[in-house]
Length: 518
Image (tube, rainbow, N blue to C red; front, top):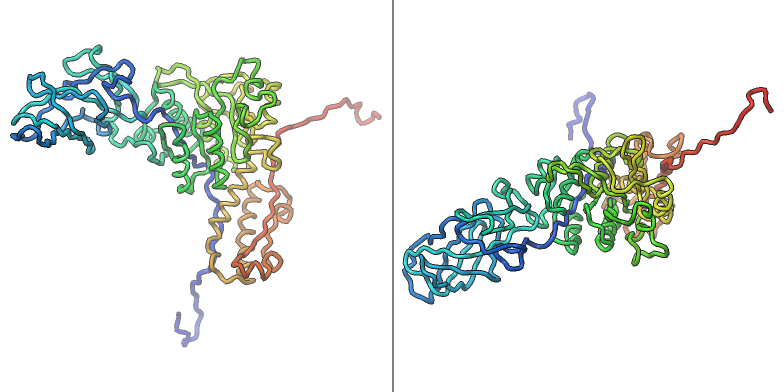
């Protein structure tokens, strides 16, 4: 505090006790890739297709690192080298072990194996002789998310060993395991932490989704992969802690249980929406409606996963060029590209604008051609079609899943606008917690929320010629009676007039005889 004993003007800084409400981000996506089984079949495991035993020839001689010189029956740790670059591989213990000392054909019994990073240690029940060289057969299991390749041991041939080993691990030490989430701001970062385009279809769906997201205007996304559909829930629980996520997608996942879990997560969080895919194949070209909308279907019996105004479903799959197959044409789920379209529209226009009548960049064709007649029933049910129109592949739907059944929230941009308003006001008014619940606080709340909504109205998101027509904010004695204040509650009522998309543009044309006619 200044010393006010000398006459003069004093300019001081004072904290306002409040802060302006800043709009939250709306286009950060969270992608979940389901890439297959928990691990690839163990190399040499009879359960793996066309695999045979992999000898230590592939890794060089397996020589003990120190003289042993101890008797039979003693526990001995022997360091088992792994091939260079395969730190993520695990030596398995379920079958197929045959270790030999020197040139002897007598097999040594293995008591146990433990894995420590890039090394594995074998404990023999019968100890090898002092300074013995050990060779033999053993098996590796590698993460399923890693692309497959044939590996041939030195001195062997392609018919000797056919193994599913990751070709990129040696040059990709940052490869992430299942369940680990990584923020990616470009496709190169995705390749660093995950994989490139792949001949594994499920890996490739995720790679194309991320590529399509950035190609269409996305700027940042969180990515995680899991082994199977049953693990999607754990990935969603991880996403709960990431506040920036506003869009959730699991490219290529079309089973109803998984889709319902995804949009239930979005509804529970209240600050994000799901972008869902239909199956790639739904029926004959002239029976698309019968394939997607079966007569008398229910959420339990039909293809569609029920209704939700926190989700949007897109059809059909997109045709793209696939680098993994020398740029052959390849069909991919549209959810990744659509997340990018959402981001592009948010950036160029705003979250209030429907992400429709927009070109899907990178798409060269469609799995099915959708006509105006075919789209009619699909649109009513909230199946958003992607169509070839005016020389471009365009998004031609902006409904939430369920369409007309969702009432005021039948449009996805309306749902996303409300998410944006709710989350922005939530984060921008945290300063009010534990403030004295009195008229001064109510006035400050009205002032801050009104200033924020005025900005939203000026952006074109709210309907009305004046702010009074577009919204209202009420926080006073009426909304905060004594019984509410006694419970520690401060209640603000907000009303907004949203702008809905011009989905049906109608021109009525009639004959006219001119100014002199009747």
